[in-house]
Image 1 (cartoon, rainbow, N blue to C red):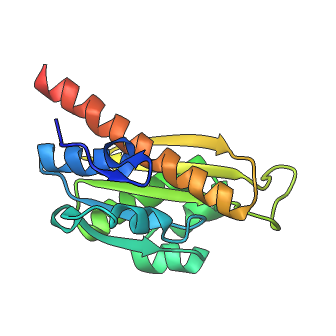
Image 2: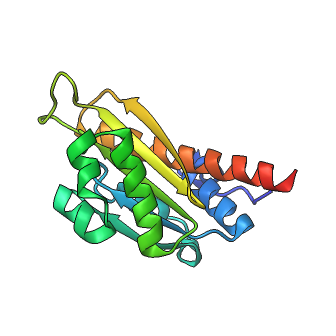
Image 3: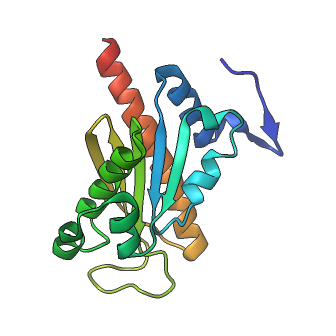
Length: 176
């Protein structure tokens, strides 16, 4: 078990980015991110961890539809058919980012952080998270409450937890 390290009153070992670091290190996985609604917050959170550069290779902020297509090669037809805020687009972003960066894993986030931009079908706080690990894709739908920053922070935390669960589940399957 890692030694106890503290920042203020919050144990660093309880922070999801430290759990991600330990899992990436244990399995020798590399990671990239493709972020829209979180605007780089996942990458910024990950790089708080000393040594993460051995596993976190790069991150993409693909805020516009054009950036998603140009930078990570999301299929335009995915966005056109399902909408930019959808499980299908989150999945395509994760797969495309992993392929573009040539990494074992990728996290993606697409959603509406607010305060504007929401509709009845796609309200403020609606976020889809994608996680691709060795070609296997998992998506989650969330509806977060709060202001813009709270939605972005909640999405970041949920994405990191999804990645940790996905790696742990794969490791359990592989090791049994």
